[in-house]
Structure formats: structure tokens, C-alpha cells
Amino acid sequence: MLTVMLASLLLYLGVFAFYHAGKNRTGWPKVKASPLLQKLTRLLGWGLVSLSLVFFSSINGAERGVAYWLAMFVATGLLSLMLAAWRPELHRRTGLPVAAFASLILTVSFMEGL
Image (tube, rainbow, N blue to C red):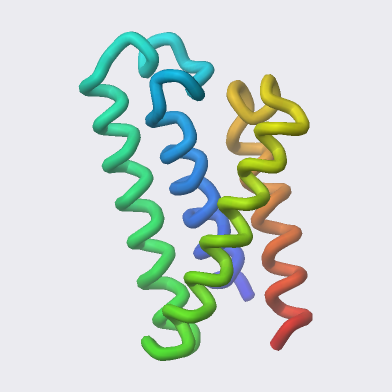
């Protein structure tokens, strides 16, 4: 269960990094002003998402792990967009508490589905 929680948190943080890699969406002034920081944020997002794929694959094997990862990727992306639309200031400024809350919800829903 801890591995699922960690993989979900990494996946959400990766999606969060993708959100903040865009110049028009980010609430961080340094990332908004620097194309290099935008690129590094995007690369960080890819690294976190890839690491979560490794964790999901280690839990259930490659065949089922990739399917679970894709499902969780869609769910976290949708959750991220809904949070950004509902409370933009919360999504822009405080990513870690929202990520922890989202990973808890996703973990509970994931474990009920097994």
C-alpha cells in the first residue's frame, strides 16, 4: 500500500510539474520569466511520471502495472485540472498539500478497486 501511495504521489507531482511548465499557467514568477526553468520543470515532470511507472510496474508486473499507471495518469490529470479550475490560487501556490490529499484519495479508490 505504501508503494501505491508513493507512486500516486509521484504521478500527481509529475502532472503538477507539467501544469507549471507552461508560461501562461504557472503561478511561480521565476518559472514564468525563464524558458530554461520551464524546460527543467517539464523534464522534472517527465522524470517523476517515469519513476511512478516503475513503481506501478514493480507492484503488479509490467502488463498490469502499465494499465494501472495509465488509469492513474488520467485520473491525476483530471483531478489536477479540476483543482486548477475550482481553486486556481490553491493549485498555483500550494502543490504539496494538494498532492498529498490527492494521493490519499487516489490510493483509497485504487485499493477498493482491487
